[in-house]
Length: 576
Image (cartoon, rainbow, N blue to C red):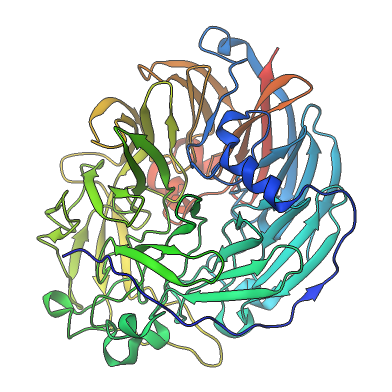
């Protein structure tokens, strides 16, 4: 049965914001929206986390191509110094300046051709709060518009920075992070006159808000709760478990101008792993389907009201949330689609008009949480719901068959490129209570140990597929699961940052490895292309590791034993 419905939700109360409205000749928000809509045609800039509203992670620049990529060399490196869990952000670029964020919500603006630092911003954070947070203190990206950079902080604030100076224009406190222990780690999204940002928190006893904020003033305009955000959704949480249901929307979604809809992926419910077993509808820590967690939702950007949705995994008992994936916009044969990966390794294809499921396909082999998902309806077939007190194996492992970093669609090849990871874990579920006093505490609801898939070794692979049908064109294996974003270009190249610290340039048509560069540290973040001074650059961030990846040194040994995980850099390449 599909989870699509037309729904209404209450609009949140307005709160006061600290606002210092800047003067000057900043571009209008309307101009910025038009630029984001057409960003795939202008390769000079990289204007949003996903590059454009199309979310292709594709650059139309072709100065670097399959014939000359062997001449690509490091143009400059910018070191951030101490950066707990490395640099995990997606850089942005505009008018020859590259911007990126690091842990502790630091922001840097550099000349795109030389790496000269133009300015930096370091907010003062609550050190006690940062020490308590599990998902901290990394930052995964920013948004830009109206001459400002927008960044959420781990202590629940949203900043607008002047792009020329780095000075705060306004800041708004959106989350009582000192009480709830969650904040912002993902990038915001600029839509018309709003900055939209979702909170982290799937493992924490909260209600997972997504906010719409006035881009000029910082005033909160609306708030949507991903946990029981409507009366109908509240009914899907037994025993009032919605009060501590987790959820959130910690990575950015996208905007469909034709329907005036913001599409957003939501996080898992809390606790991560539930002990309800096959009777999950009436038993366990959170009985019921747990709407709107592990869902894709469409919101009205002006009001925050929900328009329609599809719950990818009703009662997600495996931590395979929907917040991880991009929304790849594809038009084909008169139909308009969004292609959205779920953390489980399944990829959903939606009708953009209403979130009707058009297809579902799996890109991982190590998968046992369901037997399959119906490609016509999205219904889970043969789901495995686990109980407490015994060890059980679960595939894929906690970092997912698909991690939170983005894939890439190349309109020239017509292929969608995505990293898939093959790993499993032994899991023992515990009946752990939700703790909210004096502050909210993490609740995984299980202990786990990483292990190899049956008859195989842990590894990753980059697949090239038809985005709608899922038909495989080619696949390239990597000895350990990569957990970074991909970039494809009009030069016929697919850039793959791997876990060992190598940046690969593959032929988009065949997967042939044409070039490799060693960045000296693992990759767990973004990669973009931009133009400065008439020259094309490739910029990739380094350092840090994922939750499972923090154990790479013990699990895989080799180069991971000598890698420093609490530092990072921006490495920028160009032709000689």
